Length: 231
Image (tube, rainbow, N blue to C red):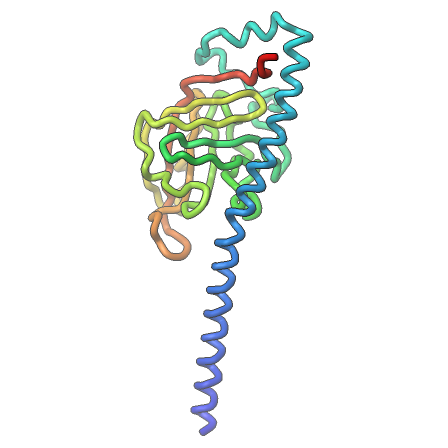
């Protein structure tokens, strides 16, 4: 009798635990879009502030504004104004630094500094040790496969990716993709060119922590400087 009661109690505890996990997962899934939308709104506010500064700069230094019309070349890929002498951005952790857009997927999400849990709930996270967006080097962004980077596997070579920051819009062209083990070291290599690497878990439909990583690579093809709207 005692044995049967013990088994019943254990079964009840397992059921309660499973129900708690299910409810928590459902709550997280409902909360994620709200946080992602809030982060995008945060970037829109920062964009307006940057445009206001551009307006002031354009009226004070008209000659400097004209230089933005010069075609972009490899030698002209400058570091953002917020970067230090090493080319790494000086953003603070959790700061909203831009917006990434996938024209083919008709999708835009915020880009935040850092790849912690809090950042990846709101958008794509920029690895603090990687190159600044648009700078010479490898800019690395991470995102969850079932939220901000959903559909990443549909992108093919020559598809474009746009990243808007306070320095303007950087347009990248997809060059390829590969799948690596989640524990592989050195999978993301440094580069002398301005390139972009997007990383997410793989397989995309895997239930639970996925064992592999999907790496999508792209090269910078164009820089559209931030300009103030015409009066």
